[in-house]
Amino acid sequence: MNLLLKSPNVFQNGEFVKRDILIEDGKITAIEPNLSFSDNFSGHIVRYDRFFISKGFADIHVHFREPGYSYKATIKQESKAAAAGGFTAVATMPNLNPHPDTLVHLQEELDLINRDASIKVLPYGTITLQSQGKELSELKKMSPYVAGFSDDGVGVENDELMLKAFEIAKELNLPITAHCEFPDEKPGVIHDGLFAKQHNLPGISSRSEWSMVKRDIELVRQTGCRYNVCHVSTKESVDLIRQAKKEGLPVSGEAAPHYLIMNDMDLQDLGRFKMNPPIRSKEDQAAIREAFLDGTLEILATDHAPHSAKEKSQGLLNSNFGIVGLETAFALINTEFVQTGLLSLETLMQRMVVAPRQFLKLETELKVGQKADFVVFDPEAEYQINSENFLSLGKATPFEEKKVKGKILYTFYDGELVYRNNNL
Image (cartoon, rainbow, N blue to C red):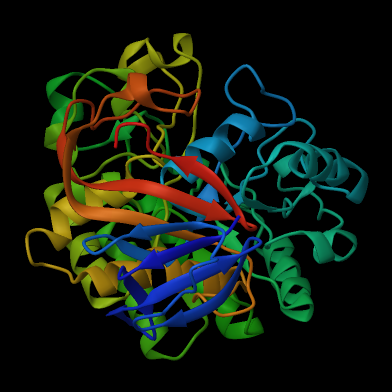
């Protein structure tokens, strides 16, 4: 693949600058203003004057469902969906069958990734065996092959066991990324607010999340382990994370598009509005938005969680928890925050490229000598979200038919074109 990309806006050193990019045999060989080329250049020359380029987006929290649940999704198809969303690196959660809790079990997932993934896929290992919270997984044996450790989907209740996990993760220089939830505080399916009362649905308390965040931050104080709070949904969790950062603790938090854009009064009694944790109150939404804007929640993560159509067609009460988000994340946040002037496009790149790539210990910028790994997008292009066009096998999104701005045009990974928008 030989390409000369003329005059795109390239994200470099925290800002967008006009640069030409020369790619030869899949590698970036030059990033300079006004590159000249010889008459015998044997490749394509493309003008990208109004388009933008950054290193591929990264998502530290996705579910690709293999091994064990290929009827919901596959690594092959969901990695294609990720590329369609501009992502070239993702970290996959371990609620699988078998759970990646031993090196032998992890190898099953690694083999599928090596065979089928079209982008970089980094798995998490579980914190405890089968995510049951009773005995630690083979953390040290799995450490060379994982992005970190998580029992996503459930919280680890045992304080002593979690302390031991933090100590080992610190020793291994890997993060604990935690789904924070005490199950005895979670009797329901949605936030225990006005919508739940109006529709006579059982609610999930905010305390189920923030009480475990509080416990875990104390473990960070004791151990110094890197710690990430998954899909923050409560104002109390935001306050705890903000205070931890002020203390200089190695704590980060994820903001997901649905918690940033919606509150519980936007809910409908449909499966595509059901996720865990639930969409909460206006006050919680406001706190999450403020934290996303000021960098307290510095990572945008989707919690992309595909399910079968049957599993998502049984209303709020009986549908499975989880929605998809990889193919809509950029457009949603670009529309709601960048196009409205709340956030600069450069800051959005910090949330979608720099911070998550740093978390995963990946390169954050385009550099000469690298294989092509970048996304080309048009932040002004308008369209309407239609889940039938998703590459993901999951179709459940609360943003169905929403009008947005921001199209992914091309995605390159490992020197290859892995996504092309066929609606150009």
